[in-house]
Image (tube, rainbow, N blue to C red; front, side):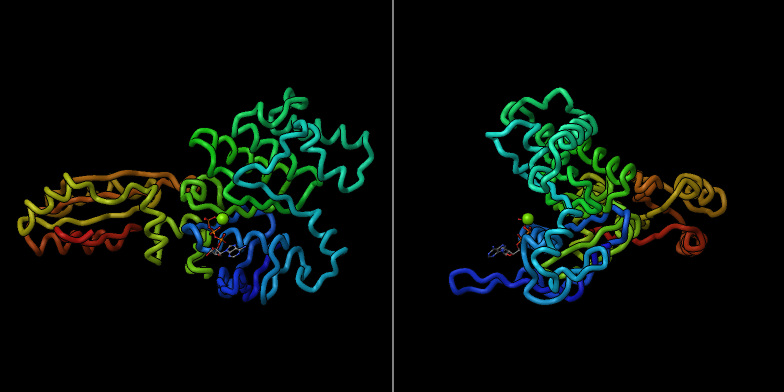
Length: 343
Ligand SMILES: Nc1ncnc2c1ncn2[C@@H]1O[C@H](COP(=O)(O)OP(=O)(O)OP(=O)(O)O)[C@@H](O)[C@H]1O
Ligand SMILES: [Mg+2]
């Protein structure tokens, strides 16, 4: 649906050149919710703005719905852009216009007949749950309500693609969640492809199917949300994942590991799905002459699949521990030794 081929973007301001995108290759499939995550300045906004030519790539191709945007005429681009809606971090509503007028704006620009506009706007306000606010002004709404209006406006021309640039960054966690649920509903009910850029891993976890990590204008990691969360490959992805997976070892537990250092071995076990985890540990204690003690752990759900992280200590002879490890390695879990001073 959206393909980036070696996209580069260089800004020139005050005689200085800033390379924001350094050769992006990315493919976003029709009907999916795709997230791009990165730190501030990584190039996220530059990337998403190339999809509707709010920014023109310096080189490379952006192909949307089969059309190479960079080779189209102004008129052709205008046609394609009708298929792309955009939602902004700070809503970008016109404060001098009512909610109705804000949502109607893209339809007025597209010269839609008045009656049709009326019908469509009411339909959209109903869909985002704000039918009673048609005559209010944006200043009279909460942040979450403003974003619902922003979303209704983005959907006015029945786009195939919805771009969201930090759409929930200005909202509290609960409101964020309700907006993300609304985006999910849009994706399901209208089969609209959604591209979300964010610096919040919780956003990715909550609604995305696939994710790419951007750093210094490059995609450094990409995959299904489940794969990236369960086995991040790069340091940046690991940082993002640990920001919400709560998998770093607390100081109190680290102290125990240090105190027990040399007496027993400590391991981190990551398991996926119901079949692993607790039953595995009780089996270990039965099958081998090893005492198992859970020091710390948590289970999170990722795309409907439980994903666990346990810090356990094994007490027993080296030989028995080795046998136990061999057994664990045959299961669907990953196990790594934790050293007292390592992370
Ligand atoms: N119009 C511009 N002129 C000059 N430099 C720009 C312009 N827009 C962005 N940049 C620079 O390009 C780089 C990438 O910026 P971009 O806005 O894409 O990052 P971002 O990942 O969206 O960051 P944030 O999370 O802070 O929004 C930054 O170094 C930024 O300073
Ligand atoms: Mg940005």
